[in-house]
Length: 68
Image (cartoon, rainbow, N blue to C red; front, top):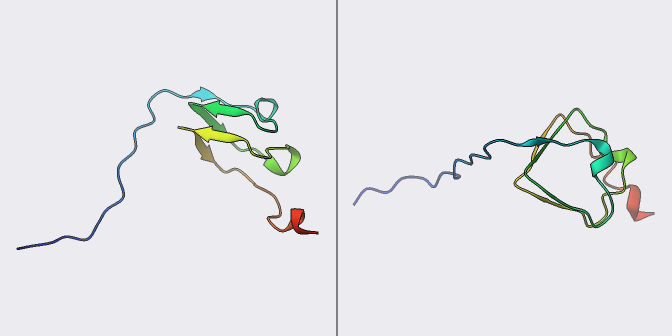
């Protein structure tokens, strides 16, 4: 029996709607959007849900900022 190493699935997100910084908010549900060249450190994305979204060159800010 021959086994191969597991491979991650290939995802095809299809046509995505352009996402803007103003679309992101606390507890927002965002689906099928593409976010490019954004600084999310400027947005309150607390408990926001991103389903079937693509993020390219997105800055999430300082991960330790909320631990003060």
